[in-house]
Length: 428
Figure (cartoon, rainbow, N blue to C red):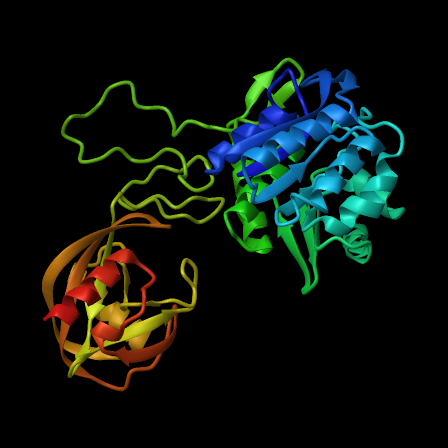
């Protein structure tokens, strides 16, 4: 559950409309607390009316009576009194929720979206409670009093927001001259997220979309840096799939998979993907190879993804590796990996065995197949048992540790199919 506090937008591109569509697209249920009804569209803000602190507070109470949100994202609050209502709940009934503060002071068009006292309450009560604050350049200047028009200024503003109490600060550089870049300041240091200008002009609703994507990411348990990466990728996808209105584009929060051909070839084994399944970018023609996304590097394999997993035995024990990369970093799994282009199952098995464990096998024997749903998508596994193994087991590639474990004592493994395979070995 993600609680979304903000104003309406008749265009559907920003405000609570964008918030709801974003968290739904990323797999979360959104709850609402309306702060204001605005009169705006993709061209700009014409006016707005606040709901009043009592009515806003009553909405927050109604949500809290119904569920316990894992994350709260606030956008347009409108006044100090409204911000105080939210602060009261964040210090009380919403105290366990991750809080993302999008300090909406002006719209992207430059129109004001707040009344008296808001900045003071944000600085005094909301910033110290925020797990992540996401100001644009103008808002970073208003909150810190610094000049924030360059990368150096963004870094200074990020550090200043940490000193003001924020857990982390993502200073958004969409309005930088040249290519955009965002800067994440955290307690452990800073990190730049370089971008690329997808659309040359203003896109209405990007700030709301990014803030809500971050809330969904934190609600789902991602660390802040990972949530930022996922959210920026999603934002670029919505801009590429944007809807053009009279004043310009608004994000396309649920972009289509891509156009189908006019005529279908009934003899074709499968249709080549036209858009990246991770970030939505247009893919080049595949030809004889699988297409690689020019933006995020995702290789668009056929689904299910072809992979091998290896059973290596030593007496009653089986070899497991500890994963050094996501997903399931730190968990144990069987050795193995995805087939490279042009490899056979057996060639892949020999390569993965050597890369991950430094072992060699005289022979690999196919003992079965498994299927699994993973963070990579659907996977079909060719299960190979290594015979005539030689060498000393040492971790390499995407493994940080190798160890021999009796199957009956194996912990939960990184992938469900691996757990099923090892459980079957325990029954042998």
